Image 1 (cartoon, rainbow, N blue to C red):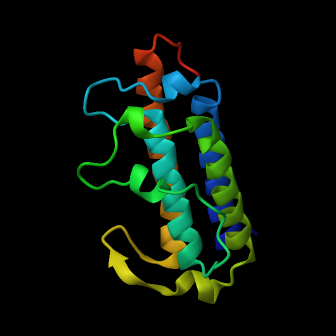
Image 2: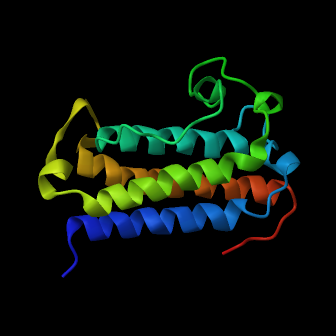
Length: 162
């Protein structure tokens, strides 16, 4: 019988597979392409997902987080006035940074106790209230953003992947 940690870990694993399917063959220049002037590029999307995974790790109690390049949090911020596509630096390492954080999150979820997953968040969110719910949301969040990459791919003239 599958446990909650098994199900969440499986969802996180699938979300990473979808993101890789849509991003792995993009060139650094294509990672910066915006299908419309105010749309996110793939680089920003993946950087944003790195920060989401990092937030999840913190909420799971992980304190020895993978290192980020200087200025990473600002470059991939959701704040108004965040950098534009030409300001993201070397985007070729983004998927590796995502994988470092995401794989660590999967391992941490697999090792979590039901009590750890049931811990309420210090700042509840309208869509999730516990650490486990946030971990489950992280999988859906990554898949939602992976779906945005399909629009980027199509606007670059690439065929559908799935």
